[in-house]
Image 1: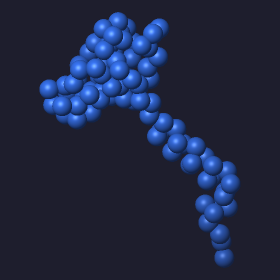
Image 2: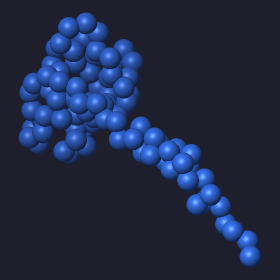
Image 3: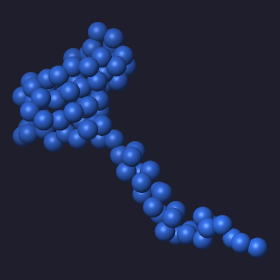
Image 4: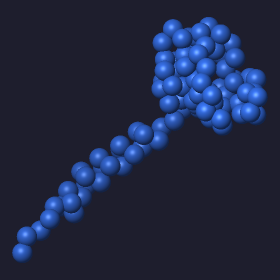
Length: 89
């Protein structure tokens, strides 16, 4: 990978070498000069320097699920505001 890694919390990284549990996928827990990762299979946590991690990343899998939930929620409230109001008799 070229350039500086642009990582966000929640991204899933596929590394070149597999973890002893057999998984290649790691979830980004914290971002800074050092990156904290959690194994997606067994939950083991590691901290790597950004320069070391950059050499061992095969690809970045972005997670858009939280944004998708927010968009669906806001669109439902915007397009159907009366369905959430309680009608009086």
